[in-house]
Amino acid sequence: MRSRFSAYALHLIDYLIETTHPSQRHLYQKKEIENSAKSNVWLKLEICEAKKDIVEFKAFYQNGLKIFIHHERSVFKQENGIWYYLKG
Image 1 (cartoon, rainbow, N blue to C red):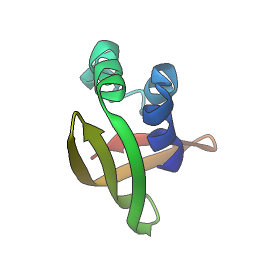
Image 2: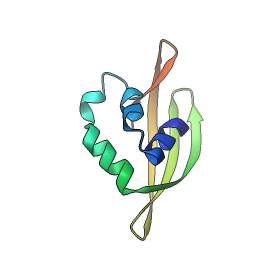
Image 3: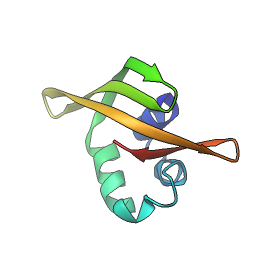
Image 4: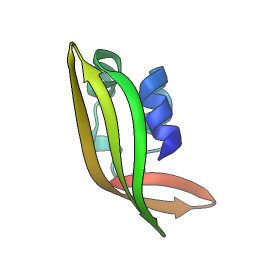
């Protein structure tokens, strides 16, 4: 989760796509991910709870003069030693 948050902050769009589970990649468009990453200033990640393959987090970001919180419970899946974002 932390690496994906950092990828948003650093605009590492290819990394975000690569760490999304292959079965789910068709749901995300590269341009939309890029727009979200670049139109916001990513401020802080707070991990609320982490259990096995589920991470609940709050991502704080700024858009213009307003600060927002994206609160999500994400499901990850490990395959061949690699963790992928599955859904949230």
